Length: 229
Image 1: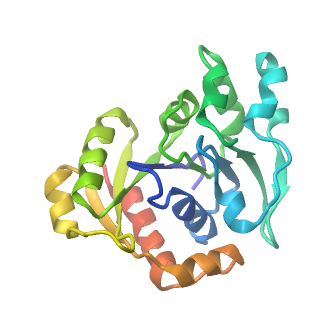
Image 2: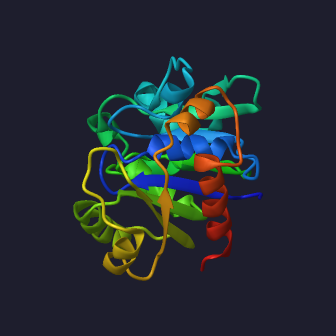
């Protein structure tokens, strides 16, 4: 899948963008070679994997005028191929300095020809907007709730990508609506229901893959992104 980039963005906070980005990475069919952790509110796949990141986007301020691929950090994740990862700092405000043409230049340095996945959190910063423009597909995570569907409906017009899919998550302790209801509230997009799979998340953290639950769902999502127009 050369040139493939999957951006994962949340309609609201806490609806599983990090878990989905990690699941796509662990899914064998994607062949991911770069992971971008750009959740401006903290977190990211490296936290799920227990990888310590020494330098993040905020550390690039000193060299942002001459940013290139050499400023993107290399890390290796437990027994898997070597990936490039840029870890988002703890506050979206740290992204404020990447205005004008600096954000596009940084994104161009981060996005290689090979397959990549990006955890954008809520995507409320210019770096996220630039990443989405480079993506061949976008997964919009949303809670299976009326408020989640409403937030998703407002977000979708701002996303321009060849393929966009809505992944609805039934979070514990919430009043849920059906996937059919989400489809009615978010017309014109493929909607898939993602299981809240605690065991699956645990397997992701250890680098394991599987054919059930979360991993099976990711396979269906990737297939839909490959076929939806």
